[in-house]
Image 1: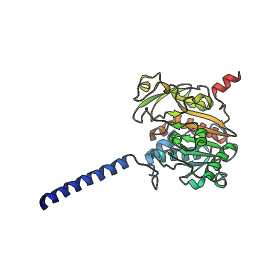
Image 2: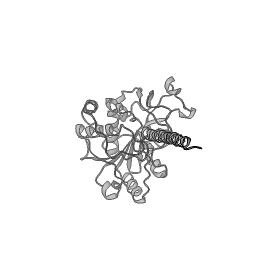
Image 3: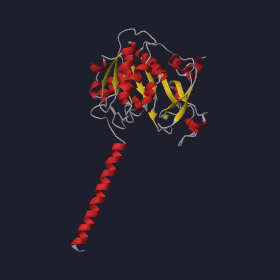
Image 4: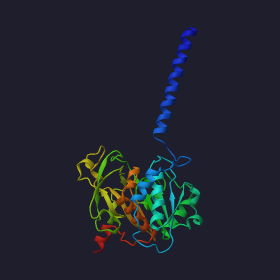
Length: 308
């Protein structure tokens, strides 16, 4: 090979390498993994929509001043709705007087000493959290089992894959989302008369959001399911990847966990969800349940049927 051909070959090779590097970088940016160093600011327009949608008052009067740790660390996919959720929780606490919110992405918060200052921990779209340190696991479990609250928003079930007790406490594990963020899906009001569903006035509804499939397959046995996917709706039933076992997939639930309380709602991939008054009222009521201020029946329906 002469020098001219060699030089041309090296040039072509260099161009191919450059294209590959740009492609890989683009893909990594498209599917961003992990929390950013600093959260993007919420615009005045978005803040105004949240302010207008947040309830004017708490449903229950707090028994005492309440404080929530809002935790948003991501080791996996980072949802761009996280700053909006944080803003909604901040506004909700201030506007209703139901609680004070403290925000963090520092795993060092999970010690017995630091958690003692909070009444609940809210996992805001956290992903792939592992809690590898035994002391952190113990601190969180002692916190909820001792009578405090846990709140999970959307991706809060996309954690604890190597910690079965943590996953069981939250109520399940992420197992896919045939119902993508671009679609509009039907939600069934499983408990029309339950106080935490008061915002929906006894009706189901449709929503543009990403809906998770969550294991286990028999959710009614260890949680009181409030909202579920309505697969009687043709569009919801025909989403690509839907299985026969997806019927009655839970979207929102509550449960007692030893002396503590857990509230989870899978709505919240799309930031526009937090501009909807009924959804924010559902979240506020669920948070007040987790805090211990809104007393409701959290026993599984199947358990109640067996007791009769």
